[in-house]
Image (cartoon, rainbow, N blue to C red):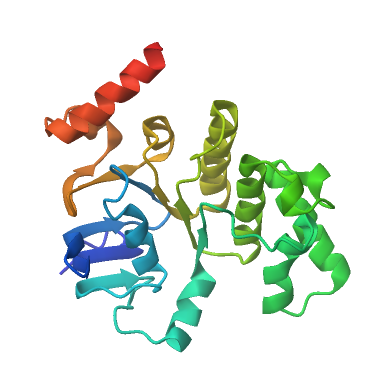
Length: 255
């Protein structure tokens, strides 16, 4: 029997394997994410970090193993069954995935128009509040092409929140943005977690972001989990690749 005091995980990977042809991307990967927790998935490029997120969204199916999201084993779910999951779990893509022809306001309003019977005044109020929350309120009438990469990410986060999810997945939120914007995005993700009690999974290779956000860290290397625990525990981990990541980050800080 599970311990009643311990909440059931919101997301569980149980021995998940995935290969594309001969390329094994996930090899019996197991970890879990508790409700309201932020888990960061770390590792070099191409180790399956983003592939893990795509399994949570049901865009990819495991070759073997189980993926449990919001208490449901989704490994065999159809697209139709996944719709219910995607109302609870939303993803902020690396490129923002905004609609180029819609203004910032219309982009964020899109999920609200899709999902429930709100009038224009209510939609405008919600969007305004979300844009204020992510710090881009004055950009509501601009098109995505007028925005920097970091601003696009902020708008994408606002749009994800408009769907009122229980869980948000972030794919490399600070990649290709300047250090100040990276810091602002990190602060924003942390604040949203606290204010909205969101469950979050953050794929990143940015150690400073992981240190700021992670309740626990999954470290992937050569398709396997080589570490799963808190950031403080990771700092004591003796795995050579983990040490290399930590020491490279120290060099960056000194520089």
